[in-house]
Length: 394
Ligand code: PMP
Image 1 (spheres, rainbow, N blue to C red):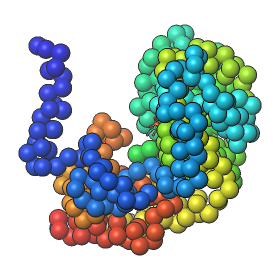
Image 2 (image 1 turned 135 degrees about the vertical axis):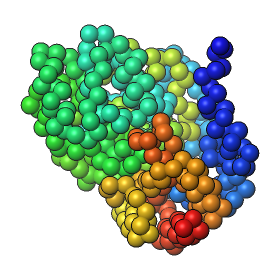
Image 3 (image 1 turned 90 degrees about the vertical axis):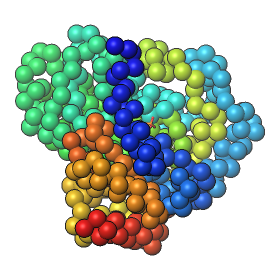
Image 4 (image 1 turned 60 degrees about the horizontal axis):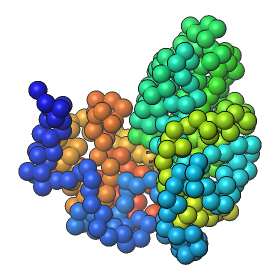
């Protein structure tokens, strides 16, 4: 018996794949040709498995701001926000996020993971209760496990099941945190936030929504599912990331609760890690502004989402339940999913291969994501690649 025994199943899968010459996890991007094309594992591909939803990774204004910040402030802060790592631009970005979300308080984190995991682990503690959607992201699960609170899961996107579980809590509802996502990262389906907010209004508790995949996509101002559902007042904390629609890296939490400023002094994923680099903050500030100034990006994103969804559905593939910029194709057999992923790559389409336990069911997924920067022709080429792979396996 050794510490390494538990890794044996992973080692076995890895060596099987290596023998086939397939590298789905940790595929190497050798060259980026544009925000939608790259050379990956030696193949020129259309990127259909990134989270570059608004396509801002190569925006000239974002790049210019990042370059200038490196010139002015250097490559890194070399310290945590609590020590030497708070620069004036971290504060400016917090103010801009608060203003954009029309909330009073905001905290900027070094990653989305640090924001979500940190808030989940800090808001609730031993003796408190966390009720979360069963299909929550790993960052949410990691945080709630660390919190020491009692953890209750409700059925994915099932407000009636949430109702049942909150009802059973009785007086404990006063120190209960409910956690859901906006758009779910694997299947692209949206939380029924109007129903969830109604249940929260009925019983009480606090609601935290991770809008990592919905920022810039939904709602009049692009604030996400809560805005689209008209229930922002019922959401106590919104968390999210800079690594998707804002095309950089970092995370945030916004709230109207003044206690968020107390959380800042207790949250370990903020205190014990270096703050985001000046260039990252600079490009994120510009991306946040462009997201508001260019609603056409969101329009193009949704046109592309519909085009890909319809195309894949017409091929008779099992696609996600809801049209979204995240579209998953379910492939039951793991080996078939690996084979399809590899063939798609060879035919010029890079998508994400997702296998259990990362997928929400026992099936494997080919997770596609679209960007506002994709042209309609590129979307058609992704569909054609799926068509060719499907025909070759018939
Ligand atoms: N929350 C959700 C729902 C996510 O999907 C992710 C990342 N995929 C994160 C948080 C973490 O964000 P980041 O990768 O920016 O750290």
